[in-house]
Length: 154
Image (cartoon, rainbow, N blue to C red):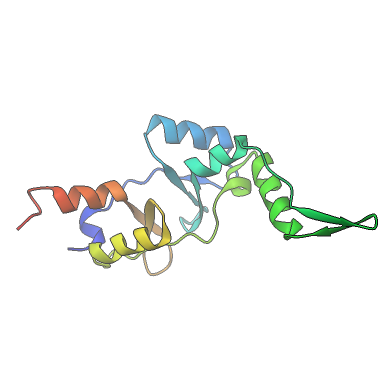
């Protein structure tokens, strides 16, 4: 069986300029854990997850430093700290979304998608056509329903 057979086709999405509040409201209202961010043509630009929103409320620790003779030496990249800080202060989807979204095609086998979800430690996969346009989404719940639904069992 294939992703196209179990995916949700009517995907709720947001655009890059939509507010964080709109994203949170859609997640809560529709009982979702993530929502794709698309451009005007329907191409996936990112995804806003519960984790992205919760991260905004978390405390951000600065990078560890070593002080030697009055000079500071960063033990980790300060860029990571700056990126986290920007995300925590974001007010629109583009600023807080997870970029480089892992997607899947509709003709991929369900077992391959399940493997991808487990390996990448993610909860959902936007389904895109050959041009990269969003045509659906498949979640862990969709795969669970397939795996343990008596209608699908042989």
